[in-house]
Image (cartoon, rainbow, N blue to C red):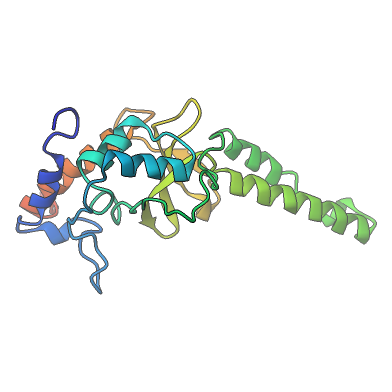
Length: 224
């Protein structure tokens, strides 16, 4: 193996041997639900092509190579990476929203639409208010759902937040936070001074942090 993922699988699995691995966020959770620094087996090239056929898109290179060289899910940022199964014979190829264009500007469009919600004070006719509000709500629901078009959901951050990988459009290969749970739409993941973060940057940054935490324990504040 060579390239960006050289030795990554071995590094992830080795973290569990370090004394403080349970202190890494998401690794150990009551009821055995933490990722435990376990990884799914890697996929074969035909299996990755089957995943792509099911999604209706060609996966960005860094994530595609991760599936081939590191694992099909398991240990990773937040509560770990979701496993993306190989499609079966009864699955309809490309039936989901992954192949649709990813439009980050849709978050601003939704914000503007929310500001235009029909208000009772502007209507003398209740029936007209109900009609216009129903149309507004239908458009709101469509915009809200479309925010994640063209993305693949990678992980659950907790509290209804998710991490997405853009798989279509100009932002293809970059990471995004799904923070619709708090009304903030979909926002780019940032890392230090990087305004855009790729999958490998995101995952390897987490791995370096996990290795340090597992070896040394969580940083403690020192009294001055």
